[in-house]
Length: 419
Image (cartoon, rainbow, N blue to C red; front, side, top):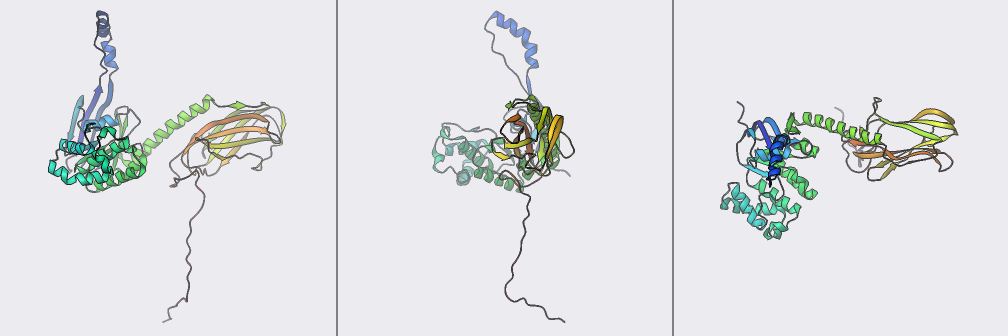
């Protein structure tokens, strides 16, 4: 028999109405009457007809772009706000960390806010006193615990809020993207504690744009899109679809930027670069690649007069301006002779060594014996390298190399006697 859900949502919707100012005159009253229908149509449905169950002990991630309804959904489950329609059932004590300083009184000290938050969540003073030292130790606030929280930094708020949330023995823990605040070591400690709580059977819901954390922690993922549930299911399956969707959007945006042509360009135009295409191993034009993919740059040109041995070159820069490499056809062993009229050249990268990030191609054709540029497109063609193809994450490039191990033995090797 299937266990009772820890959280159940059935056709849950939340509408935020845009309330106009109170009319101050007869004219304003008349305008308000005639515009009421238009105002109703502009109301925001932050969540619309959401239905899913979360079983006890599940760790569920909620993903989606900003404004997709993720935070509103968590506030509904935490009962901070009420739904416009639908039914929400929650079984167990809920501890939520949704906004910096939410539930804290600014004029109270950290110590006083610990007792205030714990009492709101149903703990007795004796229970809170038993947990107090653990809460303070985890938060790493030390003597700052006796300072009014209105003087806390955002990182200190997060430390105290998270520490209280995980120590009040919740059945259900709800965490927003708040973990993005604070230093890396504390974020790691928080994620470790979430893993421990998951193993202990606590039901966990959290929002994160860090998909690696989602993949490591979550059993299932809910994908929100414009207030609706787009997909619900196993983490690997949903994240794969979500990445494809986001990469496609990113690729379309970069392509539009490339087509717009908003880059510095100069040259004598004796040879004119007429088109530049970035293609994958299937010959498809794209701006999204994984580390290790094939990438081909195809450059179309037209020589308006005969030019002897022109030099086509590329430069790859990371988006922060770091220069990666600068190949050209001459150092690559391709001699062009005299060019005239239209033509094309290609530069083929068999295995792209770049790690995830955004990069720009500069494309140029110039005189091989002087700095005269015939046509120069400075950092004109962007592309993005996304996760996949390697587990390396540090630095600029992944090297095509292997690790091997050998052992050196000393002394006399003993052999077993025959028979």
